[in-house]
Length: 136
Length: 365
Image (cartoon, rainbow over the protein chains, first blue to last red):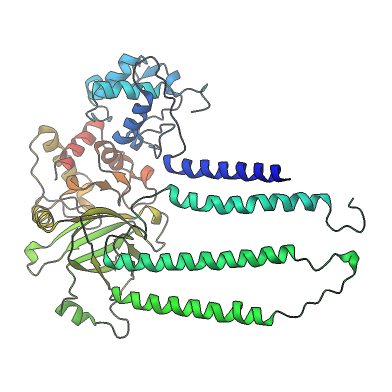
């Protein structure tokens, strides 16, 4: 009886503690490994948040990123074309994030002053967004 | 089926064991949940004398009520274990007795506790000079003496219009959503509303003061040191009530004076080609019907004054960071960011027009 009591206590405490922790970071975790770009996906996730990409885009895994101005970025790692015209390669994506007006001068995506390294990190995060990764 | 003659079947036994496990566990989790998220908007993070006395009172109340809860749980547990026999023992169960418990626990203690808290609360309300209440200063006294307000805040659905008042009308100006205050000096604030009831609440600095149609109220704020504190509308005022926030920026006296001087200036003239083009788009489109940029032909009075929008930290009543991305998204699709706001979505602008306008607004420092 004591052991069961202890088990219930431990289980409920653990659940509560996890909930308390999750409440503070939006409950999401980016994969910390890097894909294709050589960038750091975790850092990219923070950059996407701080530059405010979510103002215009729905970005899975980013708190408050529910924008309805540009296209949603669900399963971005599986998209074939970006900006309506370029193959979705790391190089193209990084150029697009850094200076979208250089590719499409009249498009609404702003030049936010993203550096090359930052673009690499942001691209790394976007490539973690795949339907085969737990629905992110 | 339960065996006859045993009211405590196996199911009841498991339920009791679960209960015994869960109750202490919940008691352990509750404080973890409370301390898990520490941030500025808390009555226990006081940065002024009024907020400190409110914080002290709320600590006293919390400890008192936790103690009362502990006593109640103890009584409950005693009652739980001290059973009066089972049904098959056929002991007579008497319902009488316990009048002393009711008199003391149900009447005397609540009376003492609530009276004490009421008196303490009344005493604290001395920190909130509310015009119109009996025994408090009249409106004439308010403006003639040291009660005279130097800031007027008007609540709107869902933002704050902030007037910095001055004896010299040329020195008055209007801003929005970012309340600057000098540190270490008392500031009298008058509050009104343009539509429904709102309530101004900056927990780090003072208690709440309601904004009531047709009834100006007053609050005195003393911020003890510089810092940035979150405020919040504390009276339900429509669907975006929760997104009617306020940023209180407390500055040293000289920084505050410098800020006042900068805010009195008209909007900066654009210099870059993009900003020049952006000003043209701004002044010739819908924007100028509702917004003012002092020094230009834009003189709408329905919406936040944008003369120094580039100097503000946040957008849409302290909801989104004031960066290029959010500013542009706000112009073209405000309804997707704050549904129901008076700011309409404006899908008529092209990408170039949007970035030009952002360039113009950003340089309005």
